[in-house]
Image 1 (tube, rainbow, N blue to C red):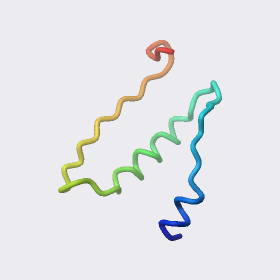
Image 2: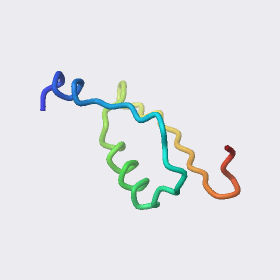
Image 3: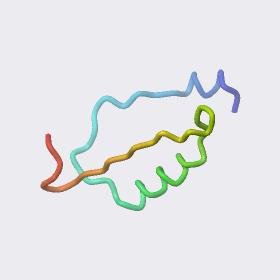
Image 4: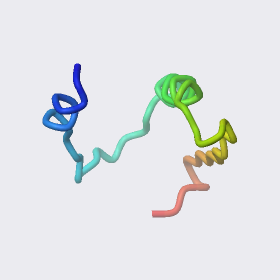
Length: 57
């Protein structure tokens, strides 16, 4: 897929279901994200995941 094709197929989700995301999905997302490039290979990621009583909103 070319960059132009990816941009044309892009969507933005504005509404979310009020249901939990399975932990395995988060693990897959974070695992895949580790493969993405970063500026000068500094990898400045800080990820926080909260659920249940800890979640505000």
